[in-house]
Image 1: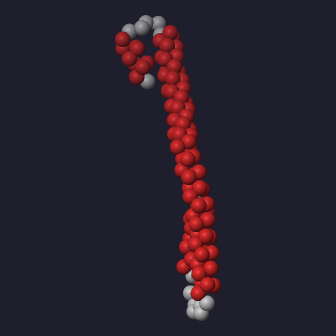
Image 2: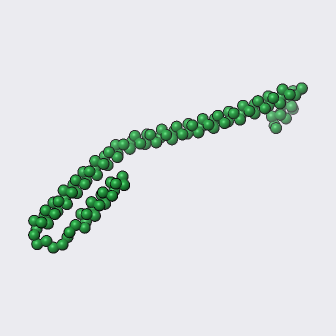
Image 3: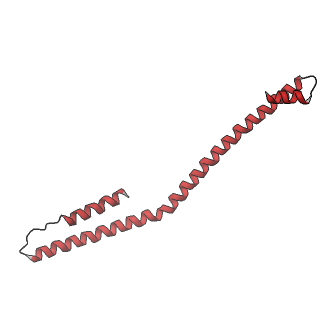
Length: 116
């Protein structure tokens, strides 16, 4: 896209600063203007083709980026779920182990162990 803009600017500058001096021979001026017109048309055609190619590839790039973002979020969610499950399982095992070591299991004992 930057190349496209540079070509367009250079083409505009070339046309703008063309020799505008006195030409007693109008055939030379006409030839120069025709040459500039042909160059401008060629440049515009090339730029138009390049722009069409860039625009044609845009939907694919957007879809690929969206898929990459979704995959990254799914992976982050998977890691968070794994960590949360591991913490919950550890808490359950610790509570169960503490309950197995007590001789009498009462509501107060269970709440005291869970509260810690």
